[in-house]
Length: 63
Image (cartoon, rainbow, N blue to C red; front, side, top):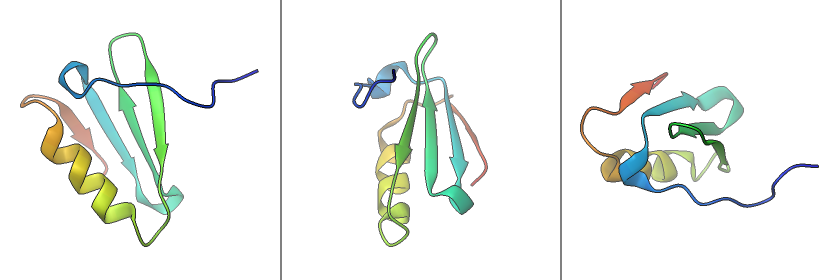
């Protein structure tokens, strides 16, 4: 069984991993790991929204 929904607080994010070819953005807190799936036409908008709301010092890989 897996979760269908979860909440991630932007101010607690430590790492963002962008997998553009899979249309997936992985957002990781200390003990919580989540994935955001976006349609290809919406991917850049979703990624930009996440990147503008994360705190400074958050690691971003795979842009």
